Length: 321
Ligand code: GLV
Image 1: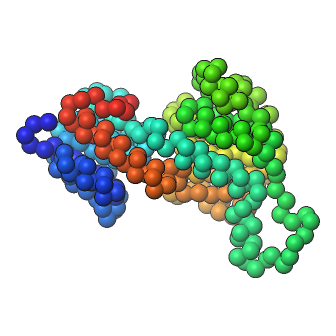
Image 2: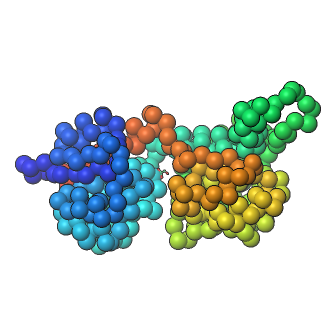
Image 3: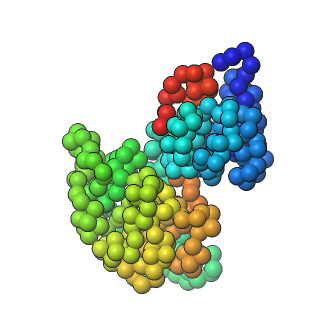
């Protein structure tokens, strides 16, 4: 770094410890009020900045980069970076980083919370209790389905997919997975998971969990045709990104009983999710909180800050994408 501290813009509220670290190395424009920047305001604020620490709510594209002549590095506080046009960054010599590794277990836990919550209808029955509809125990009351000993199909077997699979060992599940590439035999053994085609996974699984990154290739990977391939008793979990599922097709499938239920943490056009989800009892809805534990979000923000500072020092940041 030169004698002048580089100037960085942090687009959203972060932890005090993250700011303290950044301020030790940079001049920081923070946003602790957490008012999201409109694209134009972001471009204006970024015009005189060397670094950007942003979130998946910020779109970093060629138009923004063209208005940020000093920009050298963009640190996303997320493992997914579909909000960043990486080729456009590369073309301008801007380094882009993400936060892999630190959120795997928390995100896997949330996928499991959605699986268990949907299978045992937790949010639906809670609504019944709160509405005063629980009049006493009945044998056939709000029957769910078993997670233990069921077949789990994981689409996208990266670090998070593998963490989801490892948790299935305790539930004595059969685990199938589909991935662009087969994972190493040693990892398959650790996860007790068998590699299958997507068709096979969809037709055989009781729980289908989506953990692929979002890209043009995975846009609407699960649409009407794939939902039809699934068992009528099956549950779909989307804990990765909106857009991997065709939400309109999913609403139709949930209404028609094409599948039994869905547990969702992410949506197309979030936070303006398809309003029809709100009227359905067979869907458990979470507001994109996969990595949202205090420890994990602190680790993500700190990792993003370290990536940014390293890049601005002229080093290769640990998580360059
Ligand atoms: C969250 O969605 C992330 O990509 O980290």
